[in-house]
Image (cartoon, rainbow, N blue to C red; front, side):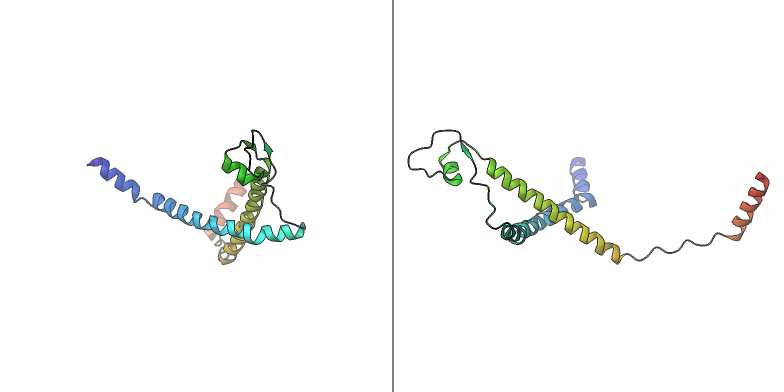
Length: 143
């Protein structure tokens, strides 16, 4: 019975619940950020650079290509042909850099908004008069 009690205590602790909520919200937030990068940021960058940015069709075939299989990334992958897909790696790396930059900007904005919501720190209370007098006496004795 004690194992079940320990498990129950562990499962209902605030940290476990917070972690579960964080994972769920993180998954949803990941979809939002992924859509932001793929649907908003990448098309703008693609337009600025004058074309479609997609390096996935940059690869080197490492094996025999069966007859009738087109030499495209998807077709070769489906056919099980070993390929050195460096273009896919470049695309994923660019997406990661853009994603990291977008998240950085979002965190910056959230922190700025959070700082605006915080009330200013109250001024320090004045030092009591007896403490001031004791400090003066101490300083006099040191001289």
